[in-house]
Image 1 (tube, helix red, strand yellow):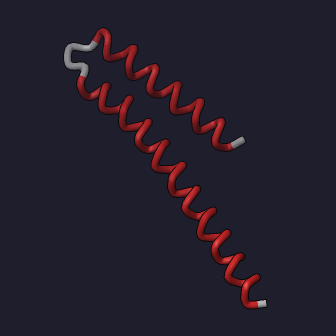
Image 2: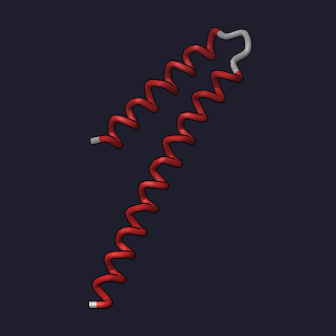
Length: 66
C-alpha cells in the first residue's frame, strides 16, 4: 500500500511541476523538481529492496547454522 501512495504522490508532484514549467519564464528549476522527485522515488525503492535482501541473507545464515 505504501509504495502505491508514494508512486501516486510522485506522479502528482511531477505533473504539477511540468504543468508549471509550461508557463514559467525559466522552466529549468521546475524540470529539476520533476526529475528530482522521480530520482528520490527510485532511490527509495532500491534501498528498501537492499534491506529485504540483507534480511533474507541473515535469515539464510541463521538457518544454515542450525
